[in-house]
Length: 496
Image (cartoon, rainbow, N blue to C red; front, side, top):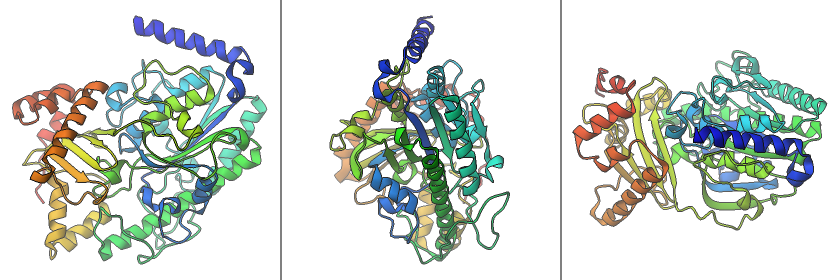
């Protein structure tokens, strides 16, 4: 009842603000919001983040030059749908109910509802199901993947974006617009196959010798061959971003629009998507806010996607949601030289696309990353549906390469705890958890993990505190994941 009364008060406050005129909200009363997301994009693929790949992201590079770039941004869950539910709610998945491919609980307020009650029109193109926070929510304007040229057609994105902007102008209302590219999600663009299901070809194609291999993957021919198609898809994502920006420019509303660009998680390869490594959660995070954000600004604060919802409401001047796990970044937008004051980011995975519970937790600062794998068992191995060509190439090479074989085994079986020197080993190749010289570091990070779990109400806290007691961990597994425990415990995993 207390929560319901508080929620009612928030809604009343929003309605009062929305009907009291622009003067009550100040100059940002009708500020539009455009969120553009990439799908499975490796941060270092962008030119503005140091990629040497020729002409890979000119539209985003220009956007970064004209706006603000965050160099230490993370998503809190490196999986498509749960990542987007965090953006919607400002809550970690275990607090919103979205602990995997699940909706936010109906009693959890979202930014979509807050903005709608304040008079905003809400629109989404691409990733419709993943971006819709709860079953009961209805967008004012919505088109899914099939209606967007498989989510991979820049021309269609331009047309749908322009139509939405015109709709908002005719209605005389501000907007919250999610433009979600399906690129560079698998399947990557293969020039031998060409465009499929209404997609367009990228404006440029790449060969296997035109790019660096990410640090978390081995540099072998089979991996390069697969990644060439990834870069093709990354190029098409940038093409799509450019067309959405063109539509916004033509609408005449760009000067009153706060624009954020990020990826929902890292690249769809081993040691990235659906994990808690650096390559899993580190995301590009670019912002433009005309008249507020300085051109060419760079900030190295640790920030996370859970900060998005409180930031947007703060920027507009609306009341905060009743509860959020993040905090507003508006002060950083206004002062790029200011630090966030945050010492670390807290990231997590609970369950993946097939419903299997594979709980992982990570705390990381700019120097070290510490991971707790609750699912770790000696007789089970990890696998996911995003391995395909890259893992196949690694497995073939492993037959004659012990180092690659060891890397595969590291990925499949894990350790209960992992510790990585992120400055010197961003690919997370060497697990330092058992190294005596890092004992003080891991002890400190264990303390940070426990504090973060307790502070955020993580249901795995007791399991973590008793991580070496198999019986307690099993009991906690049954309690937290009652419908998904059997998927992990009784599946007949075949050994590598």
